[in-house]
Length: 326
Picture 1 (cartoon, rainbow, N blue to C red):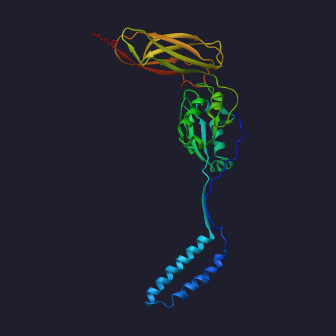
Picture 2: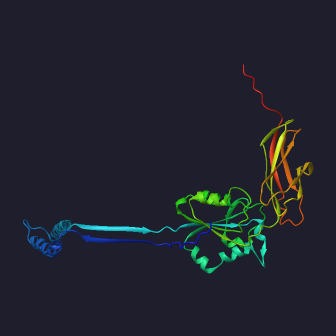
């Protein structure tokens, strides 16, 4: 969602106190005369006391008279302390492979770096506490000064997961005043970020970089299989494929264990961004941990091939445990 950036407030912390008298102040006018009267009374005492003791008696009686006078004046002491806590702003920077695309002579990531380095932008951010994350298929903590050298080797762009993960990492949720998102909008994994953003209860300020076109690409989004399997029993392995710019073309999806090719399937690619599922079934013959790799043969003109394969892990057991109840 596109929303104008707010002018976040600065920080201030200060204390103050104030003393006022609610009662009649005439007692303050009489106080010097009362103290003089106390002193006069103790000039002569019966029996006589030495001067040191006389001064102690004068001080004690004067203090008592002064306190009584203050009570009659009804003093009220007011003290307050005010602290303005800086708002918390989350900054998300897309570091997926599509951010390497150059629009003219400047890549999309460099466009984001230029905005973050702008003096007016920096001055605005200094008024708030900023926590930053980079993201591709998952989110990770990021130092804004290192965005220019951030890795763009992810396999997908999951904006929804980045939004959720950044907020989950914040204990003081009520302090979060907004999420600033730098991305080219090439979301291709996970929940719809627009729908998720509406559910978060926190404003999301999206700053788009790059053009509207999506690079042509074939992507292996996910590979799943059961965490455990059994020797001699079928073990399904499911893969999800997305593509852009290759509608109507066929690709070969291959299943490997190590370097050994187990199976292959031909897949006819459909519309841009649509998820297609490919299923393999294997029958393990040995117990132990197994790693399966699903790969898509590279297609001419692909933007990136790093997202053309993914791994699935499982543990094969010798057999199910049988329990005899007597």
